[in-house]
Image (cartoon, rainbow, N blue to C red):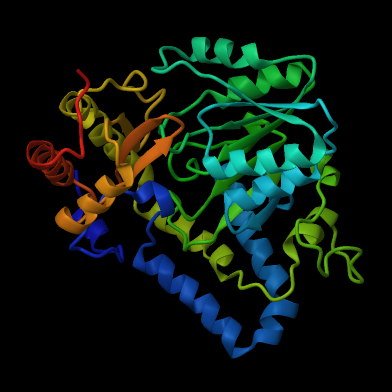
Length: 392
């Protein structure tokens, strides 16, 4: 599937078989050059950049992003990563002792830790509803998720694409049901923009965070928080700075509170228009589709090799450009380092609760050869080492 002309546009080390795009993304040369252009302008005239031009530049970038994900630019604020966005929301909500936040047991660890911290401070409870794996149908997932609902539930927090298990979850339906029940809804879409279609006007979550530096290909440290207008006054600034009770307020207190933070290099935020242009110019819908085919065509092969079963039906409903395979190993960290140091394969081997997953992710620079090499490397390890075990 590999497009050699696209592969040459990435800055990745060609000696590494890179199967971990999902963690931090990878930035093409033209987008990285645009990023450096903004950094250079900042250094050439930092005062004008920070105090005069910055707000205009950020507005242009938000407008481009808003058009891309179908929402109003003024309902977006840039943040360094989704964890930052989760902190803004979780620490702002007026949670009381006994209040409950309903989530799954499949969420990203940093988000779990944030909610745990807030619940310890407020006396609220973070309810991790256990989800049966493998998933079978969307309807069964929804039914199982809402078994965790009680009269104390105030907020629903859920990932649209999970990290360690790489599952696409039916968040649109979850949000619709939650709103009917009068609950606040917060979707962690870290892996979504540039990966699967995202239309925030249709999704209608109260809060939504996504990363641009993953599948949208921007430089690192570029993410966003989208908040419905009626919920924006609920949020306090995570960092109190010049935007709080501003002497020169803009048209939006939401933007003032969360965007103006003094000396902060926001050059990565400004690369969003260049990233969107790159995606459109290179027909990224077709690129992503080809990647999904590659992911799905190899899924059962790897499950069989590792003596495990897929976590869901291998279809576009649940699987995007990455796939997680349950793997039996007592030393996942050692296995991950061994794959990198001996075979030059960059791939995560992740703990999630009591389970361990090996996750491969595909993008334009990957090919079937990369997955064949991973397969042979795992075969070699299984033959010569006890790092990987098979179920009896």
